[in-house]
View 1 (tube, rainbow, N blue to C red):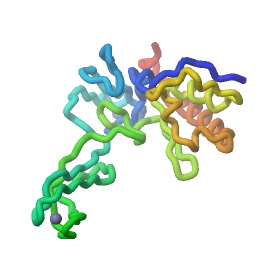
View 2 (view 1 turned 180 degrees about the horizontal axis):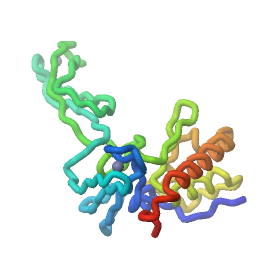
View 3 (view 1 turned 180 degrees about the vertical axis):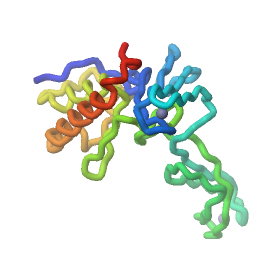
Length: 212
Ligand SMILES: [Zn+2]
Ligand SMILES: [Zn+2]
């Protein structure tokens, strides 16, 4: 079997994202109207999150529940050399971090500036809610936005022949971690994906409000 679907970027699947409702943990949907230009990130998009189970709604784009990454970028307080420091992504930002100057070795607490972090975390890119479609495989987390995204990945993982010629650097497949691409993990990934799909269908089958 051959995988020859178009090289969609991940953002292609991001118009309807299933998340865990932050209030009740049931599946809630983040719907997004994408602007014309979406790569590398869709600026000026419009998103709304709705939970049909508990009525939770979020439309405020300034609200971010996802991960943050902190940066210190300034002159050393002692010798004036450039200090640049990056923190691990976290959901609990703090005010300062002890950073050592590489030149004079002076250690001081410097104020951190935090920015939204979207890479490789199982959260939606618009509000930062936890994705509904996520499953751990060995030490990794496999995450997806919705059923179309899941089917697309499933087809790729299942394929014995994977065509790579027409892919670009933003294509979802190009950006998959190596452990997903490795044929060693094929069986376990396919199994986990179909389990996830079954669980999702069980959870939403009575919820006719979500059907198109
Ligand atoms: Zn809810
Ligand atoms: Zn210094």
